[in-house]
Amino acid sequence: MRNTKRNAATMRRGLVAAAASATLAVAALTAAGPAQAAAPGELEIRGGIECHFGQKGSTWDNIWYQVRWMTVVNVGGSTMRNVTLQEINGGSAFAREIKPGQSMSHWDNRAKRWKRPIETRWPGCIPTSISGYTWGDTIENLGNNFGYWSTNIDRPARPGR
Image (cartoon, rainbow, N blue to C red; front, side):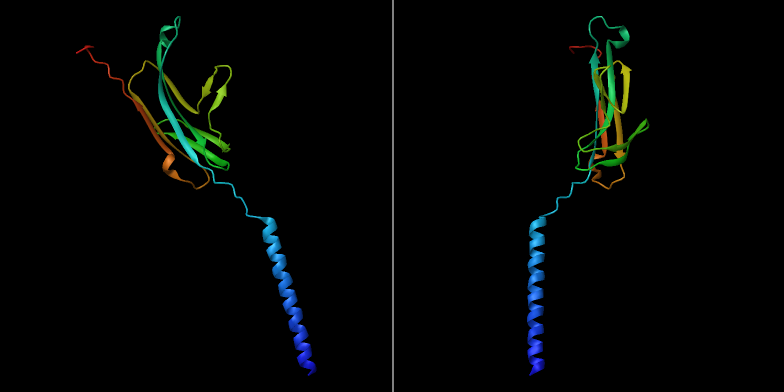
């Protein structure tokens, strides 16, 4: 009979300990709340070809010119490290890190314009194109890591015909 009483007391202590452990676990989970992980980084290549006409008083080499450019923007939620931008058959640019919402481009106060990491300027506005790709240390969606831009200006030999 003594063993039965001892077993019942041990069983009660075990149940009380299990109930206390379960209560503490539920309280800890409720207090902590869900963890919010930052979204991964996401590189997006951007570029274009712009034709500019000079202002009155400009020199002849600035009267009509085009700018071909490319840059990279981090449209994701975390910092992208060791980012490379490569123009096909052209130059490349490297950034140690690009934070969310930032790009490789920067504003030049002296020139009062955006400076892009890959940028070429030519006199005239002849049909041309620019293409390239980007990558970083983090695995991401590669669908927006390649870009191609072109411009074609048709100049008929005899306007109006």
